[in-house]
Length: 107
Image (tube, rainbow, N blue to C red; front, side, top):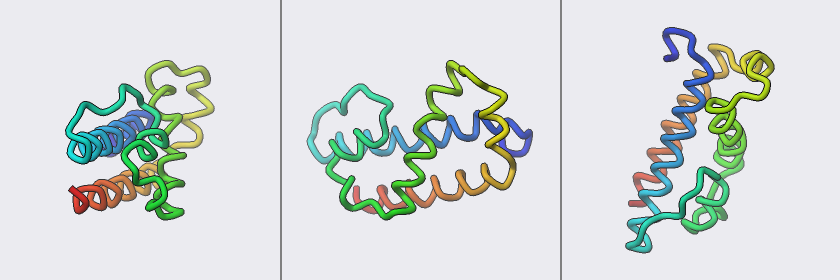
């Protein structure tokens, strides 16, 4: 998606990856199904990792949060697309990979 410049979906998939990894962590921590939500901050709080997040990780979650809803139900797709370019999406992709590795180490 990055190669084909489908930037909205790069952000959406980064959100999905972060969400699923936090849900996996929650499930392993509490041995139960994670909450049914797409809210990354709430998942981090309920998985008891919110206070462990670095400023950069918190900024990543805040950046990814609107990309989940907007990718599915865009209210202003053009405005959103203007905020996503190759450089920004490369950064989101790399930052998401680092975030996933951080949680993986906690499993």
